[in-house]
Image 1 (spheres, one colour):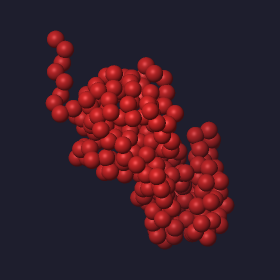
Image 2 (image 1 turned 180 degrees about the vertical axis):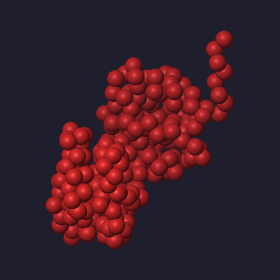
Image 3 (image 1 turned 45 degrees about the vertical axis):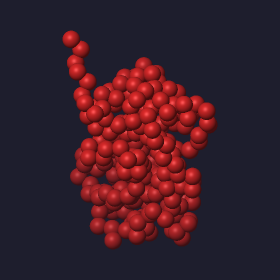
Amino acid sequence: MISYPVSFVGLPIGNREDVTRRALAVLEEADCVCCEDTRNTGRLLAHYGISKPLLSLHEHNERERCAEVAQRAEAGEKFAVVTDAGMPGVSDPGYRLVHELQERGVGYTVLPGPCAAVTALVGSGLPSDAFFFGGFLPVKSGKRRRVLEDALQAGCTSIFYESPYRISATLAELAQLQPDARACVARELTKLHETFHRGTVAELAADFAKKNYKGEMVLLIAARKEPRKPLA
């Protein structure tokens, strides 16, 4: 099954049953699994009866760990690279390792799998013919506001990941900028309490201000129907 030294493997974003047969086969055959959190990955592997050495690869050690993984792969070890949920390299560790492997000429492949951004887009009901994915919204208010302003003027649906502790404030800020903009907050995707909150930004801001919604959040903002005319 494994024909490359390194395989980047997409894992479920919530529901464990969303893992592919190919992903399980690659995880079973790998000599080592690089993962964001060894505890989370360990539980998933145990659920499927897989026992492998685990090597942490996260934002705090990625730069140093990439060289180690590449060197060991050059020496003949087979690695599977995963994150806690979804696709490695998409707002998660993996990007630097891809470049390290490219620089060294080490072969790698990518196994497709679940992605919260795309799952949320399809379920939102917002236009999906073109979209922009901006990863996690900035924490600093000034930069976040500029990103939101750009999203409201974009010609396509914009998708962001946002913390449940900041989502209410973010929606309130959006409502100040353009209250009638259409939006969606996709919450706890593929899990028991999966919910799509749809409506205008003003409606969503009012709802989230009243209720303390928890769980992982994806914020989607619809494109303007007509481009805003430039200021004179």
